[in-house]
Length: 180
Image (cartoon, rainbow, N blue to C red; front, side, top):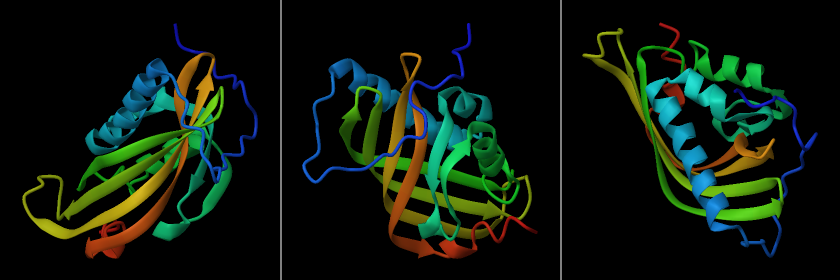
């Protein structure tokens, strides 16, 4: 049976504390670790149904550091439409690997956690779907705040805010190259 799309917390305000609460249970740690792995792996495999299964009904998305906008409360379907758009990760000529480094978890409440993740996101855009000739590549090195919300007893991915440290190659050209 699919989980209900009702949220237990409306309009979350994920705010990191100066002295973070690191007190999460082992079970929450394991469940949150699986959610972040599924987030990265679903992006890389373009497994949109798996991604849809782990996202909260509303998300906070802050892509200002990669040249897009900030959405305080983005509907799950809007998020899916954005991520799967042919001008973003939905382009079959874009291959990625979102590699997670060190992670720590900050408990905001019983139903909200911020994950602080080191991330290297490798991107290659090919000339066509045969994936034989690389058109452009660009790799981002960042730390990400990922937001997690417990919805009907299940941890869900509830948004992200990447902070770019530096980029390799033509990262700024990666998604522009999607528009052949």
